[in-house]
Amino acid sequence: MTDSHDLCFLTAVELARRIRSREVSCVEVMEAHLRQIERTNPQVNAIITLLPEQALERARAADTALHRGNEVGPLHGLPVAHKDLVQTKGVRTTFGSPIYADFVPDVDDLIVIRLRKAGAIMIGKTNTPEFGAGSQTFNPVFGATRNPYDLSKTCGGSSGGAAVALACGMIPIADGSDTGGSLRNPASFCNVVGFRPSPGRVPSCSDRAAWQTLSVLGPMARTVADTALMLSAIAGPHPCSPIALQKPGAHFRQPLERDFRGVRVAWSRTLGGLPVDPQVTAVLAEARLALEAIGCIIEEVEPDFSGADEAFRVWRAWSYEQSLGELADTHRDRLKETILGEIERGRALTGPQIGYAERLRTALYHRMRRFMKTYEFLSLPTVQVPPFPVEQPYVTEISGVPMETYIDWMRSCYFISITSLPAISVPAGFTRDGLPVGLQLVGRYRNDFGVLQLAHAFEQATGHWRRRPPIVEMGHG
Image 1 (cartoon, helix red, strand yellow):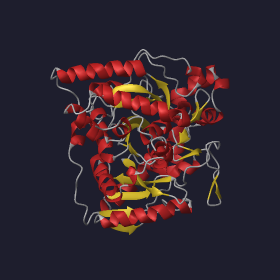
Image 2: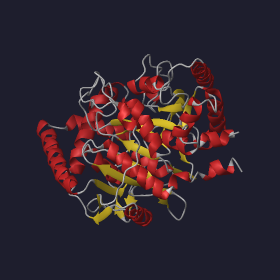
Image 3: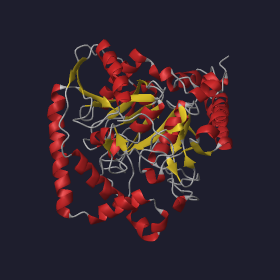
């Protein structure tokens, strides 16, 4: 008999298999995860709205469906938590903002509908910074989410609650979103997997900016295979999104095994001169050896990312104005300063400035297209620093180089965002202090599956994902 703690640390793939073969019931699985939340969530504050009665009721219904021999989806019976930026019908959705502290939507976002259709059962909502701004998870409604590997440190963000809930075995899969690194950064800080898919891979039914490509929805899990399994349920075309990619989600349920002998990978230590904390560099030196061990030909080379910074900042400011501009007029005193700053920058933009940013982004796209003809993948640090103190809103200097704004320290992620290339953060090891470090792997345009394959091969070779947070081990001593 598998004890409830061990159930919580099975991979999603294995858990789904055991549920389908009726080795374990959906109710047993749900009860085990609810106990794990009760044990560990008070220390980390990852899940901020919990729905135990509803989750158990749906688990009972899921068991009934299996007993009747009904056809079930690939995620049948798996608990899932939704990021608190995702609208959930009848369930409080705050966006981490006091303005929406009591908001209950009357619709589900498409990602919620797709996960439910695949059989996943909503257990609750995960914490996020206010409107997802910044890679540090704290807000005035629920407070901060702490890193389970060191409770004095941040878990990153903005999908921070999701990453922590996964690391602690509270859920096997979680959704997140990523503009400047919000799927990848917390994955790196919490020793889990966060995948930023190609824009349009996971359609978003935006009523404001349907053609935007900067912000994407994506999957998070503890392993790459689990991440791919979840992606298979949320990817695929939908008429609500004009940029939705046509490949069906089932494509991502293929085996991830691949022979990487002779595959050329560009190894970028600094993404063309960004400051990187020596602790991160030291961990990733070992990661490089692991890529070589699976047969990759690693070449140290820095792609030209000139113009990436300006292009990203212009598009980011413009998107904030598009989505939150009206709130700045009606609730100015209740928005945090960094968000107001973005909105004001968005409002001050001129046509020529936006045009110039688009020219910079286009030039970068073509440079990367040529670069990736030579190299099938680019590898680099996910984050330029290890997890920092939870009381610190953002990083102010790296290796003696001052950071001028609250997003400067996230460049290793957001330079990739502006290229529209698919990217993943996969566990790559730990600093001497036991803090997780992620390796970021970037693929060719729309080659999401290839990125998952390389990340899977790296994960199989290293096994870092198996190391659990101290609070989990102590709680089960």
